Length: 362
Image (cartoon, rainbow, N blue to C red; front, side, top):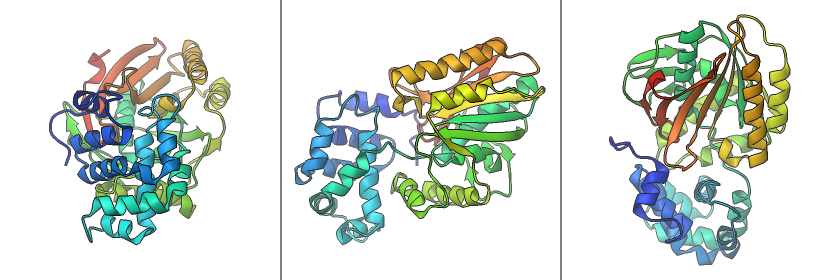
């Protein structure tokens, strides 16, 4: 259960221990404990205590280039251990995750000793959460867009991973008591909602496509296993929702192109936009992994397309990202023509809660 008070990862972390005071695993363990994932916290803390048993992993953490928090290295480490546990390798780790014993230190120490190479190799790749809980915030922003212009929309997603959030129109939602989406869907998303509900508008998605440097195939067992490993082991409801979303994606395959995001977006935005259709660019927890020069190109392409937009061919940009100071996750909406920007909400990083502000917040 999420604590009722507003908690975000970066602020909590900085309140408890400043960066550099201890190792990154221990630092993020305090964050996990504060946001209601005590088992993950214990795994990360044990990892810090026994890191010397895994010299390759320890060296990778010590020599990480750039900001380890922005690169989510602790979450990569946690997912690697979860992946091992799901394979019951070693058996003591699998038994710990199944709740058959509670000796976290022994299980984590054994995994680090025996599977250093696996953990280090896993951590080289960026996280692949593809969290469908974030679809609630994206849909709420789309409802604001629909209230503004009344048009059906085509979606362009950056950093789509397996494309699960391109299927957002196929999910069932309860947004502050407002029930929208497909009520028949097995994927039900009910964030803790704070504030007034979003505008009561039915969103019509007529096209959806995305891009990713390394797109994941929802019909590939290895892909599914990697995504499941990134779900926190003490959050079974998230695991079940992800499994349903992957099953739905096998029935409704998302269209995800393997490409550089900036190149792909520039090409898509240069394509003719049909009249009486809104075009939406959106991304969630993606920009932190993008190099500064590519980020500039992405923003420049969006703004250039916005300058060409008109009332019959509007453009909207939905961003679900950390603030520059990493003190909060904001849901931001910019709409053209006009280019006005609103911070619609602050959110839990995985969408567990949404604090709605609406268009009054700029």
